[in-house]
Length: 146
Image (cartoon, rainbow, N blue to C red; front, side, top):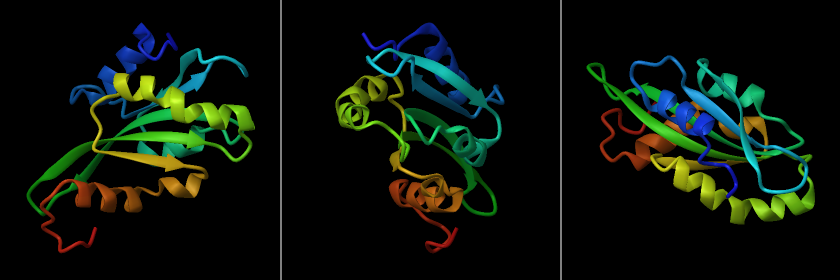
């Protein structure tokens, strides 16, 4: 097993999903340059922008983030996003294996509205992700404008 279901990762996942915990993102990294062993590398409370800064351009990583946005003037929505990060410096063999190994991570981080495949930090702009979440979520009370 890859370790995607380790107690540390499961606890971080529960924290991100909890309305009572400030943690709103987590990053899972490969434990070493070879093999498929995964480990929780960081968590935080600063949303997508903080998460993007923590991703390593030389690695493939998986992230899970809680996104809150105004649905209309009266309500907020909470959605979850799975990020598959393949930094530009990721080795070729690791890139090739991510498509296979990401399945185990998706099973553990199962509750997400959208998946974002990111290659550079600009792929993780919060406004762009909220637009995608609105489209995935059905009703849009703002006429498509964030």
